[in-house]
Length: 390
Image 1 (spheres, rainbow, N blue to C red):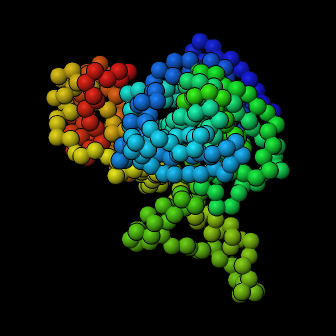
Image 2 (cartoon, helix red, strand yellow):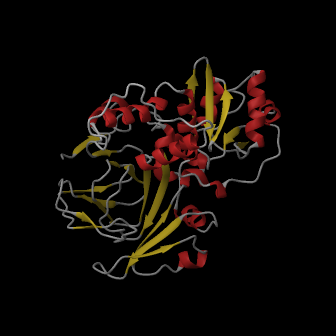
Image 3 (cartoon, helix red, strand yellow):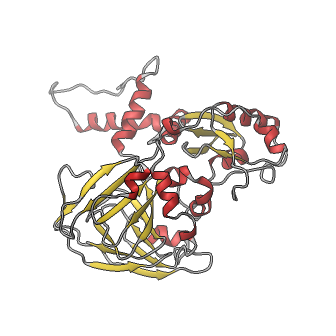
């Protein structure tokens, strides 16, 4: 596996077109882009990150060691401000997940830069703060990740060999043994490193630094099979395996090749050109890895009146949304719920940014009804006053 280094260009933060990136790099090989997001450091600083890590709904971790060769230790948050002021060890890292949900307005523009990827593939934006020498060890992820340097400098080491390393058993940090750095580079503020799944990597802070990690995760096939199986088991009458073309057998106990093909075809048949399958899949994807406990209380407001008054709306940032076309209609799935929608309203609700009357100047009657229904289900909420939603 070869490493490629590019420089960002105006309008092309990855240094090349989205089509070229998807063709040559996505889930194939890593890419280093210099100067991809030079303004990212201004989006969050240490005080904001520490304050977020202390929220009761925060998913945060602290990793530290007491010497360069000491054993890595892990503690889960949320953390009190006192704990953050007196961190353990001399080389430590604070990792805080879901920054784009805690601070959606700050990161709407960043997420829009990755609008060429399916929105439902974005798991979260994690930000890590590290003191010099801070690291979480050599580890491997089973998802695509874009690592962008905020402030400071971090050295990244990759093991690009197809074998020679192995995942340590029972390692919550997914640490690897046998790691050997075959490539290394220091990322400066704004630099981006893309890694496809399965590439062992080791980041070491060379100064006090903040690193942004945009994880692009896909569900395991077992999760998909399980969700679809649950839905099909609830059907009444149930879908049964049928074999009207069954031929006489010479050996009644034999499982033949045509039996395997018939069962495989029967399993795939309900998934092809089926509106019910589209709804099941969208419902699953919009709620997959969701965190309903983090959803705010139901907001009592009229979204139609809010738009008319010049206020802006946004989707509850903890809810994932996606939409699809069905015959002459459009369907919208948000947090596992499915709604009928117009194309423009579905796109606005599922987008990374909020929207106001500039984007929806004269809502249709069916759009007004949906806006109020979404607000009643706490899908829509008022964007904070003065927020820079674009």
